[in-house]
Length: 232
Image (cartoon, rainbow, N blue to C red; front, top):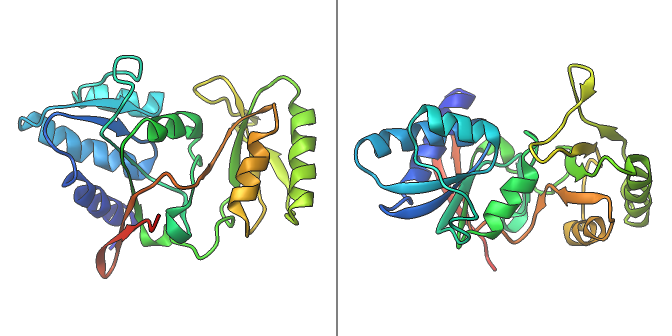
């Protein structure tokens, strides 16, 4: 199966976990968009849900397909979040944010009683870090923040370039008005230490390490669908 077919199959399997009346966090990215398309078909058939999108792009697709939306202000506690991932590591630790929506994705995931990750099996890794880690940062003090990230990485034995993400030659700006640093560490043996360290840097708004957040991963491959559960 090609990559898109695998994403559709993972999304279809995740849809089986959506129940009538749910308050649903709806993720961002190509796999999540396949989920939105399938969800819209169920909504058209009578399924009642209220969704909170994790990006303006997802919100636009939901509106286009008539998927009912709400906000975390109106629904601060959600039943389930379904989202993609850039990497899925041991015990469902994740790297997310390749599309730039990591802050809203993490807020929605934290507000949800459960989180299901959907992906094709190329996203499974034995150790996180081959995919560059997105770090969302404030514009103010950008270079001071980058310096602090470099010092933290050095203390943790991590190396690799930090790059300000750009689109068409201009800095990429998130939905929240921030910038993203992509950290190409290559491997991250101690994800918890890096997460805690990044959280302590004032200029860091959020980062793409999602540790202890996903409960289930639904992974599609040529051999079919696998469902992985966190052990915590």
